Image 1 (cartoon, rainbow, N blue to C red):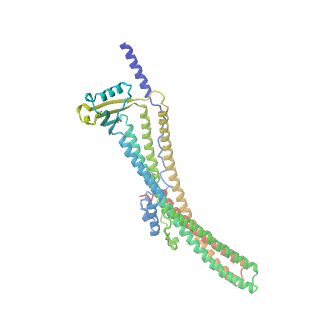
Image 2: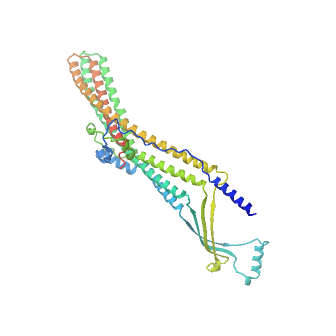
Image 3: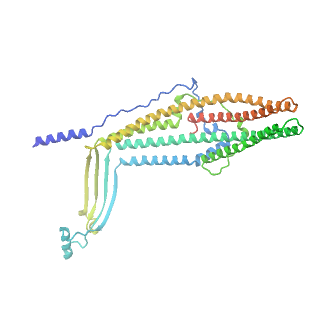
Length: 473
């Protein structure tokens, strides 16, 4: 008999050990390899070290950004998500500590008449001197429970929650960077539109004066009605451009209002300074600094660390869990007897539970945790690649539009001279009216394009600061 018992114990041990076997996984480690320079530029000086209030020196722009950082709804939603992550850390931290609960209860106890308890109750009612005058159930006590964190499951879950909280903070920082960049880009776009509107108004005045001259020459039979119609059509076309620009101004102003979280703030700006905003040399540093300065990269890195801990937490589901339960209190059928030593009750128990059959749920959880860890690695590598590509694109944009602005400025100067020359030649009957018409049109288009190029230059200045990870500190 003893031998059979030993065999049974050995068999149970083998089955238990088999039940605790953890499936093998293929994990993935992140690749942090990144080029050593941007376009072979070895300088480690990085302009993201400059605080955004100094990088964007316009006081009107700074005021808009300050308003957005206080009132932007999306940012405030993110802040609440951070608070929820913080509360989850607190919740996880409490899970591996003992629980103590107080319990009190009172109530009548009426048993069925034709049962032993009911028979005894009827007997007591018939002979009240032989038993208690009141039959009920009264109790008060404290209950203790504690899951022993033998495999560090609960502690690892707490660490994972803490890391996710830090990742949420980095996500908020990245949102701050994007909001600042978006407001700055929209603000410069608004200044550009104001300048284009001024150019259109100047051209309307110029073309109106020319149209008056053309009408006078038509009356003097020097030109035909065709010339009058062509110049008048050009004037109408230029006047019509105002509505398009005004619509763009309205939409851009409303976009800034939306970002600032306000319905009707005044978008104050001094658009006359648009062409004089300094275009400082771009100090991009080296690519490895992105790993430190970009909040989204740091967020992705923290997500990997949290995902690895989640895999360890899922692994412990295959292992047995241990818990302790205890209770201490008083219980009696009469409330007057509750405080008597004879009414004391207590219990103490220890449990061990391990999965044995049908482990599909914990296997699926384990595989999903590993898949999420691999996914986090890919997202981390993608975030680094995205950041590096964004910097390269904005560097190229800044350089190309700098050269384009210089060339377009020369073109505008030449065309402005041509407008004056064509007017003089036309007045002296040495040039056709079509030359005046085309020259004015080309001059208007080139001045509008010059403003657009300047706006793209400023956009590159904003976006390269964002791409390098500036603005959140």
